[in-house]
Length: 252
Image (cartoon, rainbow, N blue to C red; front, side, top):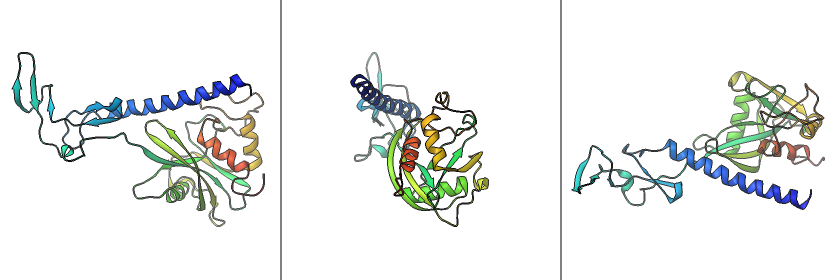
C-alpha cells in the first residue's frame, strides 16, 4: 500500500471514530429528554456527554414561581432525588454485546448464523446482549445455545468494537464447542433462520472474495451461491480472520 493509501486509511479510521461517538451521543440525548426519577426535562451539558436535572427552570412547569421579571418567570422545580450529593448527572449508556466465532471441538469448522434480513448466502458470527450480572463468558455460552443449540466450553476474549446503533460495545470472543454439544438446533430462539458449520477452508476463501456490507456486492471473483461474509471493518470479520489464521490452534 502506498503512503497516500496508508494516510487515507488512518484518516478514515479517525473520522469513523468521531462519527461513531457523535452518533451515539446524539441518539442518547434525543432518547433521554426527561429525568428518570422525577420526569421533568433535563439539560444537556459537557457538549452532550451529560444531562442534569436542574432545580430551577425558565419554562412553564407546574411548579411554584420564586421570582418574576417583566420578561420571564424562574420556576422552582419539584424535589428530585437525583439532586442529592453527586447524583445530579445522567451519563450516556453503553450496552455490552457479545459476538463470537465458535469453532467446533476438532478445530475444523466454524459456526455461522444467518438472519432473515441478510442478503442471499450471507452469514455472520453469532451475537447477543449481555444480561444483568452475567459475565462475558457466560453470555457467549448462553447466546450460542439459545440461537443455535450448540454448547460452548472454551471462551477466549479476542477484541472489542464500539457499535453506536444505538449504544453497543461489541465484545468479540473466539469459542470452542463441547464435543457432545455440536448438533445445531434453532428451536430455542426464532432469531436465526439458518445456522451451519462451515469448513475453515470455505470461510477462508469467502474472506478472500466474498466479503461485503449488507447492501454491497461481493468481490469480482465471487461465484453466486458461495458463502458471503461481513466486511473487514466489522469485528465479525476480524474474529473469523483470527480463527482461520490459527488463533485457537497451532495450524495456520
